[in-house]
Amino acid sequence: MMSHQIQTEIIIHASRDQVWNILTDFASYPEWNPFILSIEGTLTAGGRLKNTLKNGDKKMVFRPRIKELKPAFSFAWLGSLFFRGLFDGYHYFIIEETGTDQVRFIHGENFSGLLSGPILKKKGRIRATISSA
Image (cartoon, rainbow, N blue to C red; front, top):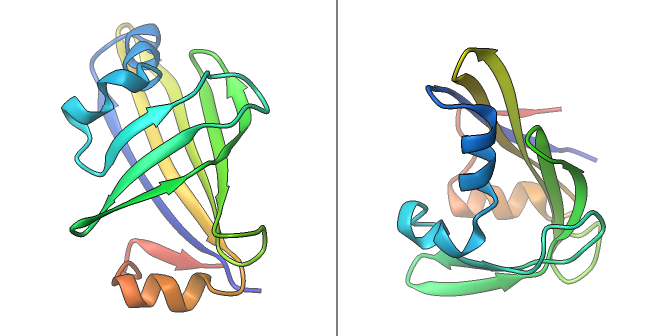
């Protein structure tokens, strides 16, 4: 089965805790993230979130499960379309300290499942920044 990955990283001149606090302040996402309109839920390992995304002119709601949670270091969720194995997205955030008040913020998603290739192609997301594994 083919999987696809998107990953970005950036150096941020702030402390690990400052970045973590912004990243986990779900109520503030609409202020800085035009794609994620809202995230509801409690940040707990194994817990579920309710994420509302902008999908063109429409809204899409999905309920991922938090798969990894290391406060001030990383967290990740796994979301699925209808059921696991059809179209899954493992979305991760990693904060690596690179100096005093400086971090490398890594953000990505691994897509897999029977429909991952066709859905991503239809959405125009497969570009040079995505590698197939």
